[in-house]
Amino acid sequence: MRKSILEFQKQNPKIVAVTAYDATFASLVDAWVDIVLVGDSLGMVVQGKQTTLEVTMAEMIYHTQCVHRGLHTAHLVSDMPFLSFQISMEDTILNAGRLIQAGAQSVKVEGAGEALCETIRRMIEVGIPVMGHIGMTPQSVHRWGGFKVQGKEVSRRKELIDQAKALEAAGVYALVLESMPLDLAREITEQLSIPTIGVGAGPYCDGQVLVLYDILGMFQNFKPKFVKQYLNGSAVVQEVIQQYAREVKAGEFPLKEHSYGEVKT
Image (tube, rainbow, N blue to C red; front, side, top):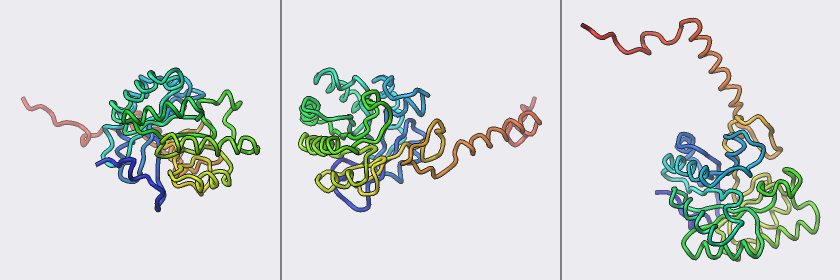
């Protein structure tokens, strides 16, 4: 039975979350994590784009369906991509519903603001649980002038605290805090009754999330300070492929044990 949002209260041990984009990786992480996020980060780590802004609803639905098939216990949350929730409340509810129909148990939206909070309330009313996301919101990368730490200035710090409280009041069941000073993340976490999930926000959040490709050392385009690589996956894959290529060229693969028996006539 997959975990429900009721299980994600302020708790110990901390919430463990990772991204996944296909059934194979989803099945590998399922037993060890609490939440699997189908992130629009797939635009960068899967599709090779520079930002998440080009990811479409159709692509998010497809990858949500794939991950859904690989999960049995972890909670599945899917990102709502750029322009899927910024146009109108009606469009937002429809798009969120499509992700739920694809297998997600909740959706994640970036940002805050009065209009978005009202839309979140309506989404929850129709049965769609929502996870919030503030701080460095990748869909606003052009507004921030790049992937930059948020909340260093006093005014921005207060803005983020106010956003966190507004999103909690709107009904989000958890809140992602991305790329902000650890003391700010701690203050937000202490002031909320819902759990915070950090990514580049220090050790004081109620949980942590990382991109799976970063954990495995597969994505080499850039490595944020907050990423810990637990494996040099890119090197491992290249070594394996090099060995495979050598064996094929040398006639060492396939051998008889990799072949089907001869047909007797």
